[in-house]
Amino acid sequence: MIDARAIVHSSARIGADVSIGPWTIIGEDVEIGDGTVVESHVVIKGPTTIGRNNHIYQFSTVGEDTPALAYQGEPTVLEIGDNNTIREGVTIHRGMVQDDSKTAIGNGCLLMAYVHVGHDCIVGNHVIMANNASIAGHVHVGDYANFGGYSGVAQFRSIGAHTHIAAMSLVVKDVPDFLTVAGNPAGAAGLNLEGMRRRGFDKDELKAVKDAYRVIYRSGLTTEEALSELAELRAQSALVDRFAAAVEGSRWGIVRPRG
Image (cartoon, rainbow, N blue to C red; front, top):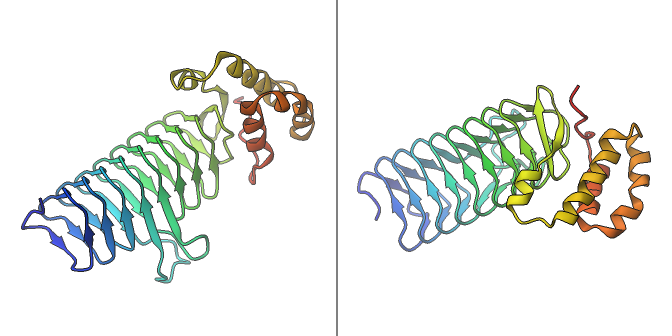
């Protein structure tokens, strides 16, 4: 299953039923799990661990070190889970010692053509990033987040679970769970209700989150006042508690409503 024209380092650990295409380079200290397909012209550098049943398409660069000027060649890692699709021309960089020395991508993600995942990003499960979407270093992304084409996220920002980042948006603030954001700079455009319905969220829970969204974004209260107002609703709804926790845990401040 390994093409004779591929170059595979002697230290690489290749699982069962792995396919590696021609002119692909698998570097030192790379581990590839069972059933993974690596197409032609891919470069994978280590230390990188790739799980089972992934599909990596041509011209992707996976596990390269970061161009950040603070990086001085220290040993850092990339970890990729199972069942991910990494399309043409995707770039994923390893971490830096200034953070946790690790970039990580979960399970079941789809990274479309020319997506970039910067150093020290932690990407959850079932995340979809459309063509040319990019996240800078140190970005944390929750499960089921969805990025439109050509969207971008600044360094150190947090993108919550079940969020939708509209195409061509530039995110410069944290995005709490369940939001849809759009624009440059991106602002809150409402809740990602359609995405949540598709994933089977209960209608009563959705109503509770809608009520919480109105308190945070439409009441005219400060963030601290709004969080205090939500205390009772948080006790009644796990989703509201999760939404409010993302708001109060923001390091850079949350996205505000679109003007």
